[in-house]
Image (cartoon, rainbow, N blue to C red):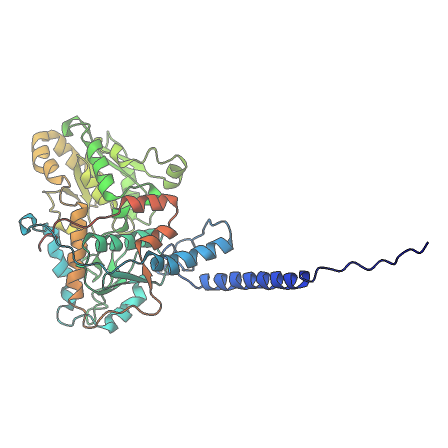
Amino acid sequence: MVVPSRTPARSPSYLFPCVISLSVISLAALFLDYKVDDFASKTKTLAGHNLEPTPWHPFPQRTFKEESRRSQAYKIVQCTYLTCLSAMNPIPERRRVASPQKVQTCPDFFKSIHKDLEPWAKSRITMRHIMEAKRFAALRILIIRGKLYVDPYYDCVQTRAMFTIWGFLQLLRRYPGMVPDVDIMFDCMDKPVIDKKEHGSFPLPLFRYCTNDANFDIPFPDWSFWGWSEVNLQPWNEEFKDIKHGSQAKSWKEKLPFAYWKGNPDVLSPLRVELMKCNDSKLWGAEILRQNWAEEAKDGFKKSKLSNQCNHRYKIYAEGYAWSVSLKYILSCNSVALIISQQYKDFFSRGLIPKKNYFPIPSADLCRSIKSVVDWGNANPSETENKYHKQTKQTSLTMDRVYDYMLHLITEYSKLLDYKPAPPSSALEACVESLLCLADPKQRQNLEKAAASPSPYPPCTL
């Protein structure tokens, strides 16, 4: 019997093209990943990606917890370049507000706006001023036709940049169509640096969170008004309500008859180091406690809730490396504020009057100075309560006034610009959606809580 020969099996005719196609697709995907990663590695974000810490105030390089380098790259590209485009935010139109009968006069601290901007009243602010100020700035902020653009130069510690920019975005929401075009150099670290002696002939306009008599720096509301995730502080409108509620648990006379301070002395602050020596309620009439934020974070911030720190008749404010965000929280307690020799002022503290809104405490012979005020206050409880305690209460620093201050400052500043602001090619649009995209879950929660809505009333009048 003849055995038929076997023909070798052939591969399907379509297999080779499929292999080629898959190879091409794989190579294309690898090439795309490479290009995305390369592109993302050059993109600076408000979360701190690809940014070095400020050289004038160094801090540890930021690390990120994304699952992989690839996922981080795609997130950077999505949040920075695509989110605002997909959001299609229209240019805001000026909102019609309620009757002028509702207009209020701005608090006294708004008067400092004209003083802060006086150095440029005659010379005006030129592009040269802006470019010179860039040497001291962490980021450049521009508002053009109701849209916000940011050009980051350096990373800011923690989430200061993100929450500060969120504040600008909420101002645009609060007063749609009313915020003028503006070009701002902004530093997000603590100490003012534009020395009046060094820059007297050519003052540089630099926004930051505080100033003093020796510098030209322009104070602006700090990031914590919209929340401070790293230390578990809620946005100001919520934190203020919680503090007021906690402070009302006892009347002033029912509170402990001592001065109280709790904070971090390890911030290159000789004043706070000296203050730690006053921790003796019997000898100095003061309870001074160290705040260890690392340990607090591990314990869920159970012992650092500010609404639980209004149990003393007196609360101490001590500056840190420069000014401290703690002042507004201290003034919100149902206690008498003791402010130790202020060198730095934020935007609202210039409206505080010594011996009316607070007791001034000299830094010399600190413990004895604190004891002297505490002893006098306890010996004269009625006068202390009526004259100082009631005046100390924080009433005018609402978020309405914070946004009003921002609006008036930016408006007056914009009048001084002698050129038409335009975003440089390195600046990118920032919008609500792009910041929420970059934020981690805890940051996002705070940002969303601090969202503003259009004001039904016009801003207060200067």
